[in-house]
Image (cartoon, rainbow, N blue to C red; front, side, top):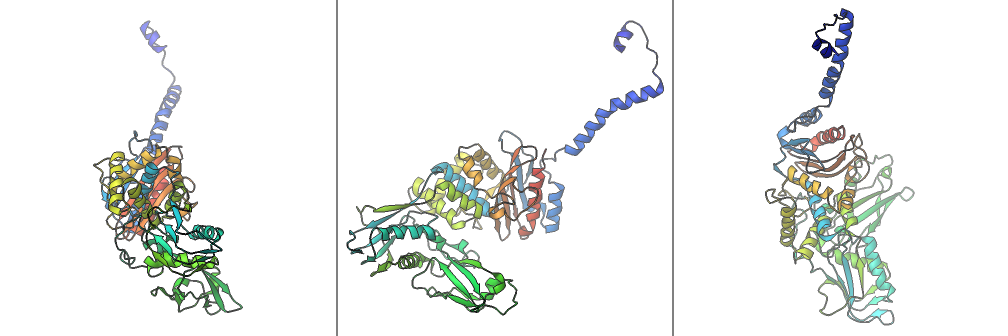
Length: 494
């Protein structure tokens, strides 16, 4: 209207001063509001770290240069929200399991299973087998106590009460170098240091359960699986009344050095209630034979020969086969609980089925070729044993994020994402309570000098992000709050 009046040569009368001030204030309101919105919601520069992350790193005495981090939308076409030293080659610890498990799902399919066939070289007669039983390992990562029991129970159901021969364990599917369980960190009794095996039984670990019996003054001890030829004390003395639970494992003063016995030289505090402790006993190479014989005898079976290593004779057909859970379930158990030996089994399975040999060099070649096709040759991967239990493993945050973006868009995305621990809910993240509870699927990683976190975060806006954060520093363990702050910052995106 003003323009029309001026065009007609008319000049409007000046507005009163109070009215003009009101118009000016109203006109400025949108501008002020817009400036306030930009100030509140303005994203950080992609190279900057959120203040809460910076503060947590300072408290941990970890320099910002020790952190590699990338936060990027799951849509690979979108730019990163944060990128800090994303191209540095870092040790990812157990986050490396994401590479091995996604590759396995992609190459083998989520329904893939392992078979453990059983052979007889004679027909059972009158409750006896005048011959040998052959159990052929093909790399099953989850031949645990319950499934070993089912396998041997099936033999008993065939009418075999006495084996008048040997039980022969064929472990030739994998060709492995010698393994020293103490080499990595001097903790040979820790199950995470167990070596892979074509016939891996119960992760080469024995679970010891302690149940206090105050009236008898002892804690009763059970062992799973039973181990033939090993002296296993049925009880351990209770500590003095009123003794706090504390470090009950140290209080037991256990001795695992002798393959023929497990000994306790201390006492068990009754205040601990029922507890369980899993250890890898001495002589891991002989573990499978002791476990098979111990379980067979517990089932009421007799054996006139022995349990030994050997090969299935050519031309012999299996009488039955014991199938593993599907790969999707195995991958879930690996990532939720960060199982090292299961991951190595999986890597060797890739070598066996896709590279022609169950060896680490064959498996690494398969994974390297897959990585180059999926991620690119420029982003070099040092996979070592595939589990992250390594000082030599390397990858970059950007390369891992790119793989996670591809996994999100892949047909196996549901199985892969469901395998990751949920913040504050399960797996290795069950104790991490906070704003991210239920909103983040993240794999953890921890070694001496390494702390890592990678996976997916569902932000408040409804957008989903890939997050990768790795600290390589002597104080890495103290930097975990900085990673939690990065997850919370990503979660709060609007």
